Length: 224
Image 1 (cartoon, one colour):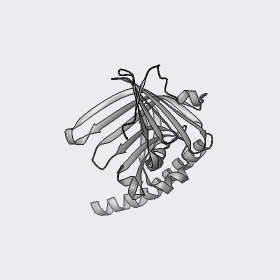
Image 2 (image 1 turned 90 degrees about the vertical axis):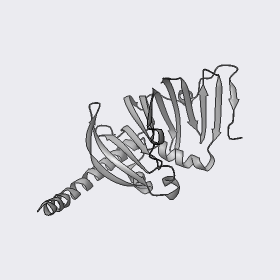
Image 3 (image 1 turned 180 degrees about the vertical axis):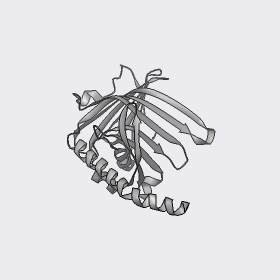
């Protein structure tokens, strides 16, 4: 009897889950049409499974998209240690103010993966999301007072699966934008990013996502 009830329940709920997924992806389509950027408070939780250690950083994030498929980012961590990370044209700069040093990385072909993960949910049409991931609607939650749909994404490409096992994103029912993202890696490490005080399409330009560097900063290229 229990098996029959469970089977019947899953049979009845399956169409509802499909409807919820379609509605969420449609909401993302509408949100993507006018997306130019965001600014927000950020909290990043990084968990390392092998030593069972969790680190928490906080700061601000600015994403700017001057044109389609041209996403630029500036993250400025303030706690526990100051650090700033900029991303543009598939190049990353990491600035450590305590030692006045900038590390520069050219991501090359791997930049396509970074583009894909950075765009995840922000300005990404639902139809494009389905091309890159198997997408499941896994429920609804209230995050910091915001009603959200939770989606689970599994990369379709083998190269992406080497870096990411699955991703969870929580999409605001009101705005169609992410309020939280959680990336699960094959190593069982994970990184969760939480956004608060999010401003959609604030006035932005190139300077908004550029590192503010003092004179005499040392530049290094660890790849070389």
